Image 1: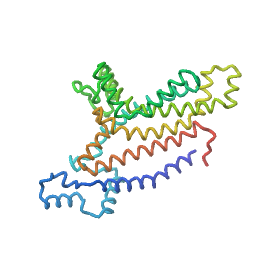
Image 2: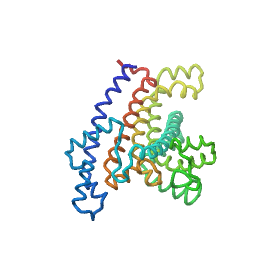
Image 3: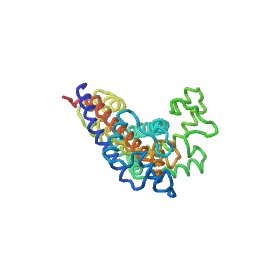
Image 4: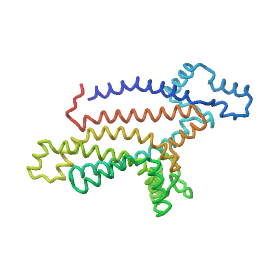
Length: 334
């Protein structure tokens, strides 16, 4: 297992190298001149040319790439062309906001999706099974932006149950220590502020987590139905073990390997869907940060943002691969 883990980690090196090339190439295909954007359309050509030289934009692409790669290897994400501030320090609070939203959405998707799938398989061909699978089908078909707008209209504007925008109450700002508001409010011992932050998480969290929840529910049901046919499950039932323990103690672990793959893939899709969700709900995450960077043609911000999200996605898939050994002992790593 240790050798397999080391080999998988070493395999990430060419993958990350390839990602850096693709990200750099794609960003430079975006039309527009960053120097012209910074100085405005009325700037004279010589001033624009001087700024391009100072930013290194007049160098050949391969030199720009090598400079970009050298900075990344030293942990330097560069400076924003617009704000002239280090991108790492600018991005981290946004990344923390996205991580908090994504984790909340993933917990919602896993808890609801796995249990809905288990109950559907357990109560196969009953009204619960039909209703759960119809909800899953609708959930995987509904666009995030439509669901987000409907949530805002129903729970915010009509029922006044939950806040529809932002990350916390602007009249009671959170004292940022870790930039994770749930942790910061607990560290401050402010339970009222903690509950306010949770309320702000609910609507964007559900909007972002609905599609993964539906996919996980359908995969869990299929995988569980397959496992329930095995002899050891019939043996456990024949020994008088209650259905609840048969499913949650014996069948769930053996049916979880394919579900784990889906969870890893869906976590990657959450990072992509966060851009849209954060824009709708005014959530100050890395998606909104990237969106503003694209509008300003801020190449370093776009490159660094996409690269960071790509690395997170790759690391998540590595963790999923390693967890396979725990959930499916039949897998042998040599």
